[in-house]
Length: 377
Image (cartoon, rainbow, N blue to C red; front, side):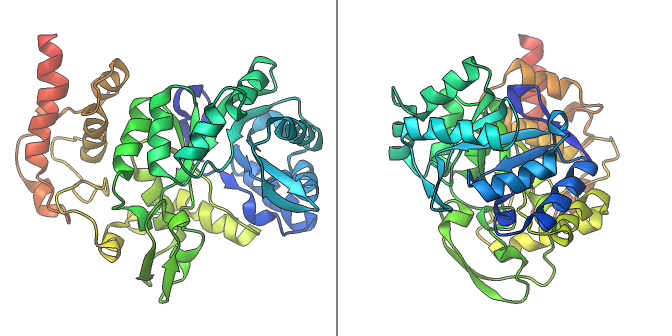
């Protein structure tokens, strides 16, 4: 397993986490082995989306004796009525539900208290208003019942506002091939990276739609974050490529694919032992042809660089720093073994790039921002 820092929380999270939504309909004989296998393979980030008794009981059995090894996200706003899910932002009701969550999972705290499914700006204003769910989450944090505060949304504009607010530690939002060219998405991702938000990518398979190979499917807006698409799914798309794509995007700390059995879990784990060729998603972007030529997608087709520059990572830092060059981002750049100034303008990278990125020009811009400006300061 590989690990990344979850924003400013200081937590090290497995790059592959576990979304438990599809375990809801499974019995304990399925749920327990899935969770045990995930933990044994190094997964430490678990998103507990429902607060329904049978579901929580099954998960509790799976994590028994392993609480200190894992990071749990519990949702404020996800409720139960007659054994079924429903959404509520009533504070007193959410407090009772949260206490039930702690009891069912046999734990004294939740690592991330997540404001659940904030669909639009109206709901965002409601949860952050005085007396709202954010205030409840902050109280839980003061009382030691939660360590950090998160929010889940399908709305890119809401996610950006959250990142800029400074009130939230973790944002969960869909990041997948289907929303590669969605207006505002990359700006939101860069903002999250700049603000050191722990970014959790959900819907990496677009609710399974991206895995329906050789079929024409309708991908709902809530699976992409704003765009409804009708696409024929390429026969070459795989779980490995979907996960590789999501983890390559700016700011993403972990992905939480939903699985309903061991086989689907292992399909996600295949990413960890896959080759560069198996991870290569670049050809798939043509299927979502809103992509703009000239933009780096960090696919690393340009490598190896004769000057040993990690071109994708260098450009990724540059895209974040364009919004604001912080000391943290400058330090990340300074730690790179080879800098933009090491570019000898041989042009090999440009010849290899399938997206016509002018890498030499990018390196000049990067050198000016990170090195020349730094010297003048």
